Amino acid sequence: MTEHLNHFIEGASFEASDGRRINLVNPVTEQVYGSSAQGTTEDVDRAVAAAHRQLEGGAWSQLDGAQRGQLLSKLADLVERDSELLADMDANAIGRSPIEPRRMDLPNAIANLRAAAGWANQLEGRTIPTGGYFGTKTLSYTVREPVGVVGAIVPWNSPLMITVWKLAALLAAGCTVVIKPSEETPQSALHLAVLAQEAGFPDGVINVVTGYGNEVGRALCEHPLVAKISFTGSPEAGREIQRTAGVLFKRVALELGGKSPQIVFDDASFEDALRGCALGLFANQGQVCAAGSRILVHRSIADRFGAALADAAEAVNVGDPRQPGVQMGPVAKKAQFDRVNRYIQLGIDQGASLLAGGVSTPERGWFVRPTIFTNANNAMAIAQDEIFGPVGTLITFDSEEEAIALANDSSYGLAATVWTTDLVRAHRVAAAVKAGAVGINCWSPLDANLPWGGVKTSGIGREGGFAGAVAYTEEKVITVLLPS
Ligand code: NAD
Image 1 (cartoon, rainbow, N blue to C red):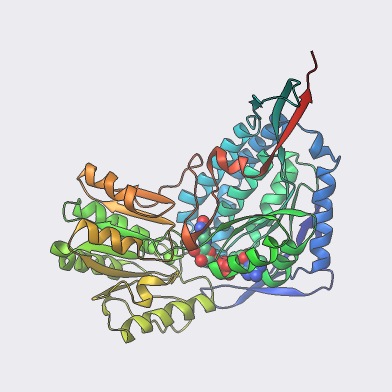
Image 2 (cartoon, helix red, strand yellow; image 1 turned 90 degrees about the vertical axis):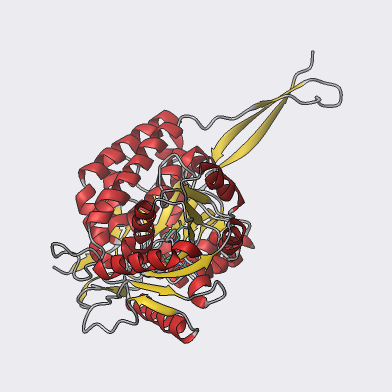
């Protein structure tokens, strides 16, 4: 079946204003299976205007927090009803096994919507004691108001879940939104918008404009009626967005990439660390921002651990993810396939040794073999750059201090994992590692109540948790003179 996807603006489907379209390509077969509207500045204008109308006296602006919460609860129920469909949309678009989004992304998205339904009625202000006004007493209090129209720019690796992280929080806060999904994965965001309409959200609160970053994304960043850009994606695009939206004083939240260390001490449970490192390397073909792609291992267990990880890599069944027994599909797109292979070749050229995998040359489909490097050092490109594929780099250390220094010797700081049975050491290392989230004996746990985001090149701001909803508000101070 050929998919023909359009924008969703103010509750209706629209072609691009100039009729252009973007082909959708299946990463398994490399065949075109449909197309989406290639959004224009005019399309963005139309969507932003609709979102703005809802804030300025529209039906949405009249709802209180409890009513917004009820709509979010209904949306959660509908997402749950359609969860297999939504998971399969995301999986098929990037060649991922549907099992992962069914087990991880959808439950997380539903939990986020339910949590946000509760937050919508809890965004309270404060009463603040002050020194008065020229000798007269005053009462000062604050209220939390929605920041305004949000431009939500989303990547392709976990499209629905990341869209919902933004959507749930901004709706709880009373904002409206124009979502720009990745050009590879517009399906689930469009279906989500239709579900929101079914839930009863007024038309215009949630709009989706499909298209490219340098057209639709840029137009959102430049639009005078967009108050905040919430972006998840690469540091390169994040930098560009900061340049464009930042100078216009828009609020900007950036969730960027990572090169997250998994630190395996010699007292770790070998099997648990092995399973966790393999999951952190190979989940979603390694196309995960928190991928644990730098494996720092104590020298005394490095050979045994490397060999076991290589066995785990070789045992991964790579193929068409819709076939039974297949654990890993292709990477999402040709550019990603070329990038991963380029880094594998660079690792070899810079002197690291392959324990498993290597450069891939499949006949058809963008399949990459799970790859493990050893004899690497932290200065190599395969240790410093985010590859965003199933490639792990093993680096040995001799002491806890050295492990911490290696972990922190990175421009990124998104996530980290510490594998050890010594709990005092675990907390000491967790405190010393510069990252937005540290897992102790677990890789990158996600929960609707936990904040998520990075330090350094991994981004600015946090999503998730109550603070994630607060981030879509402005605190306004109101002072009233109280003459006696
Ligand atoms: P990308 O930066 O190429 O694209 C992300 C989104 O931004 C897409 O919708 C794209 O069209 C848009 N875009 C691109 N350039 C833009 C511009 N100049 N202005 C406005 N919008 C623009 O990233 P990607 O390849 O889709 O995703 C991979 C990256 O995302 C990786 O670096 C990964 O680590 C990161 N990521 C981070 C998190 C997180 O939570 N920190 C989660 C998932 C992915």
